[in-house]
Image (spheres, helix red, strand yellow):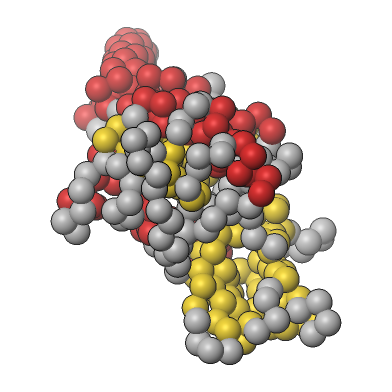
Length: 348
């Protein structure tokens, strides 16, 4: 049985709540007001995570061009500002939040004072035939129905495009958007190495551009002046693969224009596959998930394991007794050595 089967809805719900706790801990340490947990945002975040698993994509914008505004409109969440963090990988809440703190756009969501509510949802299953978990975290601030809010143009804030505005006429801003960029992590046929490739179509006045993934930087170079296409690629070491894929978060692109203005925006993965997690790590991570719910299962497993060893131990003692009576000392000594090994296993 895969260990992800142990991650029941109750376990994942408790881990989602831990994500909210850790997020508020970060805000408290920075003297930023804590966020109020919203069941509507919890349900919406879970729906997003489920949709990514069912339709096998990992992105802020799905293949039908539906983004954050679609999910919030579907939940009838009337908001002034909203944001979304995503993660994928067999990781606990602490690892997921840590990965977000290492990503500029995700960290900006974690500490944004404009938000007042938060929700999180996790699901687990097969993503491209690999056991993993998918996480969505939603932020929001509801509109004041008595007053019309004013729009403040922050660097991490973007106004809705016309298509999104149709979905919710009262929306002020969504702190997430579609970027004309493409990010792929792939293993070429017949090759052992993993290649990270990025292409982007940027503004005419762009001077520099780079992709950031949890602190890992991939510089882009202009390859077509007419279309202003930028590109970059690199072969990743095993250490870099672990850094970028454990867990996975959406990347960001940072650009600088001719007057020195720096802009950072999200970039969705077009092609990405999570790491195959070893059984040992799956065991360790699964055991850390909501101990009060899942630990009794591991305790039962340990009890059965120790009971099996005790039965084997008794059987060997009887076998040794018979061999002693038969004066078969070679078998007796080897059996005694095996008993000592069993004793060590029981103690451990």
